[in-house]
Amino acid sequence: MSSSTANFAAHETKWGSSNPRLRTIRLNVDLVKKPAECLDYVFMHELLHFLVPDHSALFVGAMDEMMPNWRVIRQTLNDAPLSYGELYRCGPSLIEIAKDRRLRR
Image (cartoon, rainbow, N blue to C red; front, side):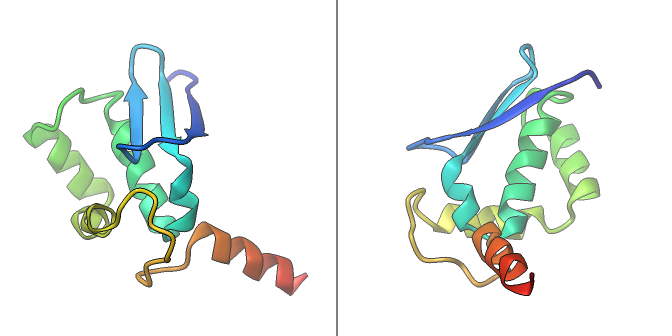
């Protein structure tokens, strides 16, 4: 796979988007408030669109193989508004991980 770009932006209606032609991925900046596995899921989902453009059985099968619990993570995100301020407790958020690492120094 050739070089790609990923960046964060404020989105009001989605967690991520991709443009396979330009090889870019945009992630919602609010993902940093969610469990780290949520960011992994959205990134994996968008990256997979570089290979499979739709949500066909091929796409679903690839997601199942790469991230077997993706449906649970997707449901966590779907249950939360995009601007939800409270952290879900299915895992530590990126903010919590960063704070923990800073405190250990």
